[in-house]
Picture 1: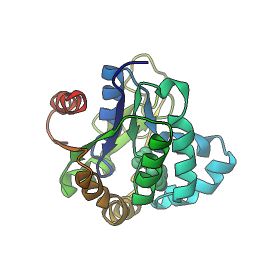
Picture 2: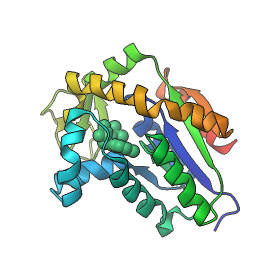
Picture 3: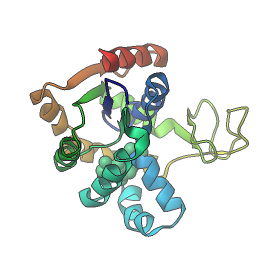
Picture 4: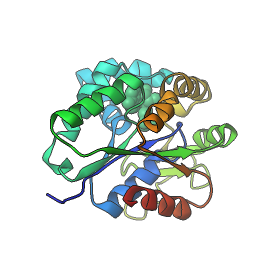
Amino acid sequence: MADREYNLVMLGPPGAGKGTQAVRLSEAIGVPHISTGDILREAVADDSELGREAKGYMDAGELVPDELVIAIARERVAREDCADGFVLDGFPRTVPQAEALGAAMDEVGRQALLVINLAVAEEEIVRRLSSRRMCKECGGIYTADDGEVGDPCPNPDCDGALYQRSDDAAEAITERLRAYAAQTEPLIQYYTDRGVLADVPGEGKPDDIAEAVHQAAIA
Ligand code: AMP
């Protein structure tokens, strides 16, 4: 095990670029990327019991109940591949989730978290979310400029097709932003009070943002 753990959390509103930046950061540092949204979407696609419980909330843009998501995250960060750390993307999203994560880390004697807060203006978020396109096959995140729904995935190594996440529809976006403001934004204060929050501007060139995120993570 390395001397230093990288126990990282990407915080920010929906559409801030958490997924894109979390993948890059996990590759740069060499610790797993853990997205509760990806785990839940996979469960929905598999039509598992978890997926059936979560689907209605997700389609409406609402948060899935804490107990379900906490169980997923606790199990995932306890796995061996997280011994040197992880990049959590989309978890925690509520104060009870943050408390559960802190307690779980303390229980097993893990080093402190560092929370990277990606800040993006609301108009930009709505623009990004409504033009986001994803690939079913490789999980790539694209924009409407790369292709419309049903078009081939721009990744030359992938033969998948682009789709739009059901929760990127206009009504669900409004609900997700409301859920963010009510339930997730308080985490900025929660982690500021604990001295573990680093703010990184989430607008600009993706490479510049990635560099700023990386510097914050290794500081
Ligand atoms: P994401 O891909 O992170 O935007 O997550 C997509 C959806 O999955 C969210 O809108 C929620 O419905 C659900 N979800 C993901 N992570 C969480 C979480 N930590 N707490 C509650 N719901 C979550």
